[in-house]
Length: 397
Ligand SMILES: *[C@@H]1O[C@H](CO)[C@@H](O)[C@H](O)[C@H]1NC(C)=O
Ligand SMILES: *[C@@H]1O[C@H](CO)[C@@H](O)[C@H](O)[C@H]1NC(C)=O
Ligand SMILES: *[C@@H]1O[C@H](CO)[C@@H](O)[C@H](O)[C@H]1NC(C)=O
Ligand SMILES: *[C@@H]1O[C@H](CO)[C@@H](O)[C@H](O)[C@H]1NC(C)=O
Ligand SMILES: *[C@@H]1O[C@H](CO)[C@@H](O)[C@H](O)[C@H]1NC(C)=O
Image (cartoon, rainbow, N blue to C red; front, side, top):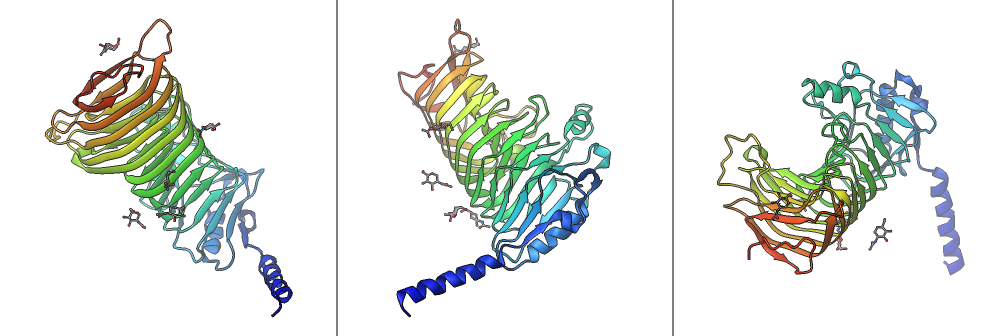
């Protein structure tokens, strides 16, 4: 075949494939009302079944814009036939309005929307997930509702992408990833009031090769929390209000915890209680190692740098000889202000301790121009450059 002929054939083939189009499964075609009042869960379940069974193209479950869909807790499960699936939310998904109205389809009450065993899932569309958390927070504050669902959970996925979605007012944490290797989370907004209890932003556990970038989290607890896993790059996150980007807590109740190769870069913390935080429970075992926090901007952050290897308040039964080992943690190029004097706090266990902590190019001054910042350590080993503000002279060799 001539070159021209070949090009022509390729073009024809392309037109053929393109004309097939990617199959779109619009929830309105499955009976969803989108009026914000009627329960639309069954329409989503039926649409999902077809999306998951589709074999060709890039099957898309479409939640159209300009409408609000009331959903009960719903599970979207794989494995699916297509190697990649789009869950495109352009409109608003809303949880039931009161705690009593939540109806669970199974005994697993972990999250409002649960995605599991799906490969190549892409959640995007610029839409809104409204978790209707306020009645849950009230219930929690009255010491009822101890266990509150997350808004969205992802379990056992591979190559997950979450891009351009907003989640507000979740009962518990906003989004969790568990067992999700190769995930990319970008351009998301997670928003809940500062005083909403334990409304973590993005929680990651048991996952490797994760990118989290270009996102805003204004929440009542940790903005990002890593509870296990490795090889994660976290960059350009705007956090606050919130409790910072945290590793742990790990090791609760004497359990194993392991986190390594976590790289946080170019993140901004505003009015948060912490910036770079590592917390582990007394009595646990395992490690946190090879973690870097770099190019960090701070504005009025209470304790920008915190390690707490004794994150325990009531563990009477904990084996206090044990602790999760913390090593090779680097803090470099921090700029900004701290709301409390103790800007750097490195509190390590007397038996296990922390080793090779490196603090370099740190300039954290007090939010109050009349005050100076300071650093506190116990059993912390490492090095700090002489030009750091505050001076971290409490580190052991
Ligand atoms: C990491 O994840 C990306 C994005 O999903 C993927 O392309 C890449 O192959 C993964 N790398 C490894 C080492 O698993
Ligand atoms: C995820 O990555 C970890 C670490 O690389 C590996 O041990 C695990 O088998 C992977 N899981 C899956 C489901 O691919
Ligand atoms: C994280 O960034 C480093 C350095 O840029 C890169 O080598 C690595 O592949 C990245 N890892 C992930 C999970 O994106
Ligand atoms: C850091 O992030 C800000 C805000 O997203 C961006 O403007 C800037 O270019 C980034 N800097 C580096 C060194 O990546
Ligand atoms: C740092 O400041 C706090 C609060 O004023 C004070 O309690 C603490 O003793 C100071 N620590 C050091 C090491 O100066």
